[in-house]
Image (cartoon, rainbow, N blue to C red; front, side, top):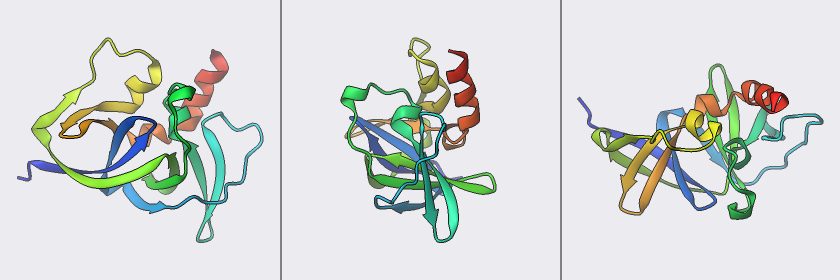
Length: 152
């Protein structure tokens, strides 16, 4: 049985994050984004990916990260979401890293904010720092996040 897991890494501000490689379809440079009126704050808009319309989600906003610590978003991390695809807008995309499954640590109960608790599954300790493991499927579920925004 394989004891390693591979993650596609990317940066959101100062944070190193990762999504399992098998969920990533492709990585794209900055694309022309068409805004969608009345869309939730985390939905940056739509892109045309070889004739297919794909929703672009700004992961920095989706995670509720502090605006002053954010970097300009420019890379699109296209992930499979059920039968469709979604593009996550991130600051930069890094390498694919191999990690030992045993090195995974769950988030502490004291973590603040609802989004990090539901979207970040845990962390891996890497030589360069902590890698936050994101749940791409939950990150792509904007309808639930939008309903919460409307309630607050």
